[in-house]
Length: 172
Image (cartoon, rainbow, N blue to C red):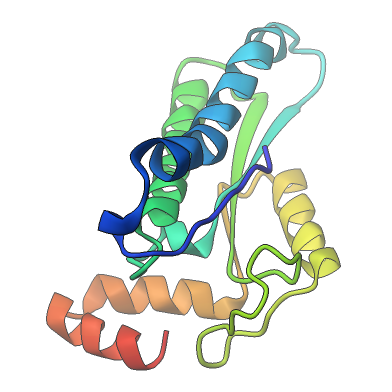
């Protein structure tokens, strides 16, 4: 499930339908609908392992000024993916694994002109694809790339909110 649209602007400048609803439909609901369509047959066929790979974003792990709608859509995708993974496991469908990939910037044109946070390289599509694919094959629940994504998540988890805001504003 690799869907994504992004429109950067302060939240109040987003059009409710063309920006907010469209972003949520593409980035969050489309992967849910697609998975819902194929999941029953994946669950029923226990002859070999099955994999669901959801492409979220590092933007879904932290607050992002001027990207609130995009961040919300990817936060929702991460939360749904993690919940689905646990539901499948706990209800006896362990042969269906869910991996969520949370990359930072990838040079696909979607974020043309953007610069990555400090020490965060813009990944090539082949690097991102390899990381997502390998994580999926290993049934890794959450794959983050590059390493600075996990660092930012850890710092956000341990720093007081105002301290994180100051660090994130200057570094991430």
